[in-house]
Image (cartoon, rainbow, N blue to C red; front, side, top):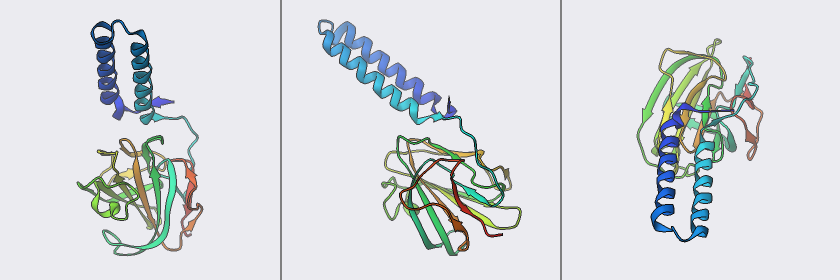
Length: 221
């Protein structure tokens, strides 16, 4: 396991603030109260560990395959439905959505190999990720990857009530490989995947998936 570079500043600042708070408590606030000092130290350690785990990147074997659409994020499947995708396709698509809790790995990975044909970032609100309007009103990005056979998969990173910053590493015209990083959502949220209607979905509502590992669907031949 390693830690993601997006967490370097946050982890450093958190560590320094907690260290300063504990030194202040030890020398001034609770100098005669060892119980209070110990409780503060334990609480600080727990908080720091929670912050660090947000940025972990576990070592895992990645799933590859031209026909596979692999999960772009860790989390829980909360939506599988046929819906109108109105931004890019402007037609019916099959949507699979993954909810990322603060305890999940927050790296986002390319679900397929191909070329980025469309990218757009939208500033917005921070509704809870499962809110019906979060897909259209929250801070979000839209990425469309075209496969070698011409089929296209749309990904949408959506910020939630806790997540306040979406990171992306792709741009239009860029070739991407299945399983490589395409972005990061700080402190969790949701990723929507829009597939052709004839894609063979391999997951069910409530399934826990792993980014880069779990097969969400198989594309039609």
